[in-house]
Amino acid sequence: MSLTLSSWYSLRVPTLSPVRKKTAVRHKVIVRVTHWLTVVAFLALVVTGLEIVISHPRFYWGETGNVNMKPAFTLPIPASRDTVPTGYKYVMPDENGWSRYLHFEAAWVLVLTALIYGAWGLASGHFRRNFVPVRGERNWSAIWARMTRYLRRSPPDKREEKSYNVLQRVTYLVVIFVLFPAIILTGLAMSPSFVGSFPAIALIAGGKQTARTLHFFLTWSLVAFLIVHVAMIAISGFWRRMRAMTIGGGSAAEEER
Amino acid sequence: MSLITRRRLITTGLATAAGATGLGVAASLSRKYGLVPPDCKGVYGAGETLTYGAERLFARHAMAREFPRSMICEKPFANEIAPPKDDFKKMQARGFVDWRLTVDGMVEHHMTLSLADLKTMAVHSQITEVSCEEGWSYIAEWIGTPLSSVLNEAGLKPGVKYIYYHAVEPYLWETIDVDEAMHPQTLLTMGMNDGDLPVGFGGPLRLRVPRQLGYKSLKFVTHITAVDSVKNIGKGLGSVDPEYGYSWYAGI
Image (cartoon, each protein chain N blue to C red):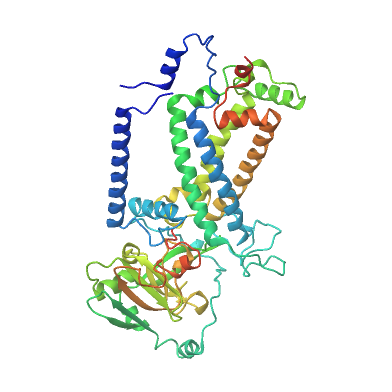
């Protein structure tokens, strides 16, 4: 026999009313958990990724590239290996060992989280409902119209308090279905054993060094997204948004009720 | 809010027990099928085990990419390792005629092979890429004897799990699992791009492991030992790499 605390309480205090209307949480538990796992993995990947880049801050197009070959571009930073000509007279500390260990461990967290979130998102209709632009807004003029409102700093309309506008939807779709898959695939395209099993990965990416260069650019695309994402959250009410993504508060409209 | 009911307690208990048993079975099966790397402990052990286990589960026999001759790099690059000592220079002056490769450990016949002996065995060539963990790479043609030919000649005893190999400077050592050692592309390399393997690239004898990063392709190889465990070699982590903070498995 089970006696729950709430049923006991309602028996004892039957006159406790009116019952507060239960507000819908803005983000489901699975979204909140996978969001923060992704945050932790992504930050670890960025830090260790930059650390790995320092050991060879030169980038190439194609399959191969080394210090005897002409780079596409070179980062104007000192390297952590003395074999790389950088123009600097000193060599940075080499932290590649643990950086690589952590990079791949964090990559596993990211990939497994992405698989769970992606499968749930497709099955539950989360992507279709929340991220695919609503009918009538699947065109450039809707995107342009919303962009204009941002630039004019007009306040969001009533509908946006409960849901995402077309620009947010398109951005999330690009991040989830383009940038993250691309950064994972270009990462795998650098692995000698993975490419051995799936040579198509290297061919799609345009070669190992192209994959590495794209991986680097994709990192900055995602970092740019992160900066704008956090800035927007700060502008629209940092703590309220944080509560919604952690303990699961309701959306603005519901909270004001 | 619900209190813990007896049913819930039993269900949770059973689920936990089943989960723990499942994990235990998975761990012991993983060990049995060689899915756990020697550096599986510590903070990064989980990631390392997932990487190595996934590769060995799904791609144990996959081949490293081979390239057309037109993609061979005109200007390959090799990190210089410690300058060769005088003994090495003397051997180099005599064209490495007294270079010897010792094969011992858990094999039927211990062998000592000269480069000429190796060349009488199957000679293979492959055009594969060397990828350094730093990020750079080059493609070259590599010519030599598959390690599997030498190991088959010596006759591996049952229970061999790893091949331990070290360089003329014994502080440079590595191990690979027996799958990697018997892989057809794992090559005791003596030639590069139609010439002898230059000393800068590990000549006269380098073990090319093309499915893994460059640091597994040890230069100046003199000694190969078949072992059933790496516990008693160095710190027991499988190679010098984990001792310096690098992963033992370098397929990624």
